[in-house]
Length: 534
Image (tube, rainbow, N blue to C red; front, side, top):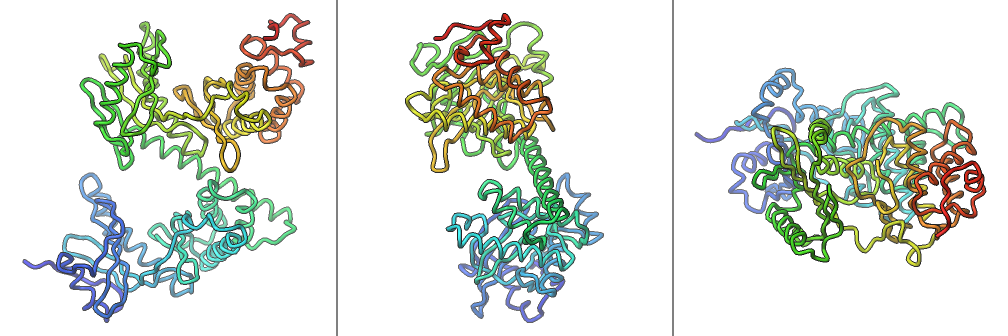
């Protein structure tokens, strides 16, 4: 029985040209070019018609398995992704918004829906952000005007990020409209702009993003009180999107999916990043065991609870950290919160999703007894030749180090993140084109919340300060504190917080002696455990 094709909407003149390509793609040859495929979801194809016209085909696979009931309900009410996108394309194209011209909507006999649009050759906004500042500013103005035209037409995109904005034929175009919907509320517009702002945060400065927000909202300088309120509302929407995105990434790091694959080695189970194959993980584990057995120089730490080696996995230098549960209570605690390797894996994913520098977590494994984790292993990116913050002397400029650490702490605490063991040896620094790149290791204690209490902030500031050697001058420490306080203000008076940080630093009796610091001298007279200088 030959396959069937049913055209649901579009230009009747195109049907005869499209039918052979859709019904028998195997015989189409080079008339069809696969651009991208997400198995079981989408397939993007460029088609060349007999007339020479280029057409873009977007195939929406029919969802099966556990999605069958949900998809059946959507089909009954016409809410399938393909139909939603088709309706949005037709409505916005008619209103003059720059979207690909809709040509046809068809259904194959297996239930797959196909949208045909005019093909646009170009680059996404994500690929063009490295343009020179003058060209980039004109580009951002065009993007803001496009978003403004979308909202003026009474629509919200619903998934507005820099991968869904295309530059082609001298214009900017909106793509991927299956989440678009009619929306006239200010909240929907703020959400759209917040999603775009979040996507651009890793590539553009705050000032550039504020200009884009203002132009898209039709606000002119000098900003009125109401205009500033609207701009801040977009900023809050961007922060909400950042939190939701990070939570989504962390949920995905708990189970196999597109990014992570199940990993099983004997009695040990876990996940691996798909870029690292299972054979490479096995070799890294074997090299780790061999280095420990032979007391190799690759062994970095051999403690009662954890052991660390430097090995390779798939040609990538990694650090392999192994934990053994000690005592009777720890396995029960780890059964509730996850093994150290699993926590570190998710912590690294969460930090990187929030654009905070952290070593890449490649894989983790854990061995369980009676359902409780008794041992676990983590493959983490080896950050060499970056240097730990407590070994910067003679390698990096002290002022830049102090500023970079203040910026890191402010970003962590503003995002509601606690590292849990924020010593200088767990912060790695390397010189980059835009300044010092700061990245974190020892991620098993990382915790995410809506806010970090002031007491916890002071504890982490003191821990980092105490672990930095005296080669970082006290004047730079004070400047770093002021920079941190400007970015993440305290409720308590500044001098009170600073004194509490100094006293907590001295109580740790770590690397900072406190000599030359007036507050430390006062604390010493008050009986605090002031160390002699090194």
